Length: 149
Image 1 (cartoon, one colour):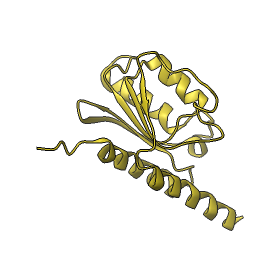
Image 2 (image 1 turned 135 degrees about the vertical axis):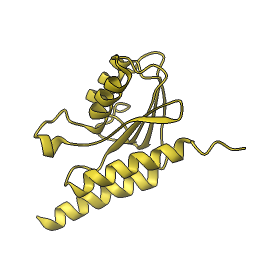
Image 3 (image 1 turned 180 degrees about the vertical axis):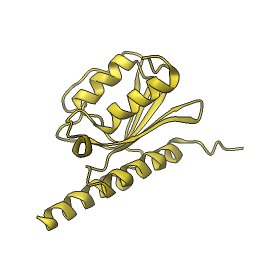
């Protein structure tokens, strides 16, 4: 029997978080942290809400997952995030020693790949999971934002 808990399943959950952020006027990036096919953290950008440039979805998810696990390391965990992590988030993910990062859309300008940010040597990264859905949500957000101004 096929495992229903695949990358698309969890990326859909991250996209739901991104939609929540969209509705709040946040750049719609969502994230979930998973261990053993169980979501232990859900987050979306809160930079506008908290007036905090560090309140990215990944940072919120790292904190929530660490609190859930009772420790700072996220070994055995997978982060699903709708946009490739930026340099700041990739640095935090490095220190968390997360096992896997799965992202939706690539950030060609500010992403950790473009910035050549190193991940932990044991961290695996996979991209372009539900890329179109993730990209379209961000594009729609900025189109609507421009039309309001």
